[in-house]
Image 1: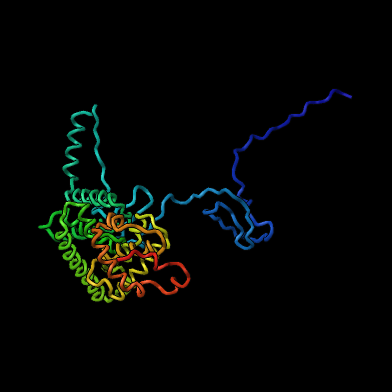
Image 2 (image 1 turned 180 degrees about the horizontal axis):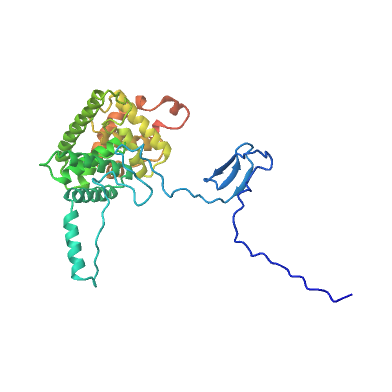
Length: 355
């Protein structure tokens, strides 16, 4: 036999990788063709739409980064999730570019920044921002909730945009808006508390309150009339301008909390205030003195007695006023205290101080 002969081996060049488009994902249980595959981007899963079998997880959301709500917006603009949200308490587009300059900036940068500030200077926005800052500081001073602060800012913006009360000082309008916002949000505050918070006198707060009440009521009626003229029907349960007066019951909760009284005493003082108002026992007296007298009486009924001086420090009325109101209530104590509470032993009329 002769020597073995060499055979040439041909090697095919390696082709670059390409996706095999003939392969596709199907459900191993249903084996439907074509497959009913659903991509749940919220959960990051690939799910069979027929049987619910999870075929894959941790999928990447390849959709756009933002969502638009053009159809829901009345101004037909395109708000997106890029940048800060628009502040409804300010006017304008609220989109601007500021040219900044530091200590090492050139004179040209400083001139550009100065020119840009003059071009974009909005006196109206500056006035609103100053007023909002003052409203926030005043509300924080007496622990008023944020919803009341926002309501007061909204009321001030309405007055500012309408150009009403041009002769009144800004501080007076702010005090009136805070007082109205407190009543709208059912956060009981008195004229005396707003007076002690601002430099506006108590009679001036009362006058601006009456003017603002008429202004907002007239504006609300105009809005309803415009809706009717346009062929619409105003919402009877809508957010109309309704300002309810502060009642002694509303004040009892906060005063009892400041006096560190129990929940039972708070509920009892509120019930006494409601019965006193319904029966007209303390007719003609202010809600503050009525609430103070009810708390004074309720604290002794549940054996948590507070002196008239302690209650006067919280309510802001004299202890003599509280004692005089209590004398009237003591004479009609049978009407003001529930008979069930006395029968169950929750309260004891013998604990009441003598007049």
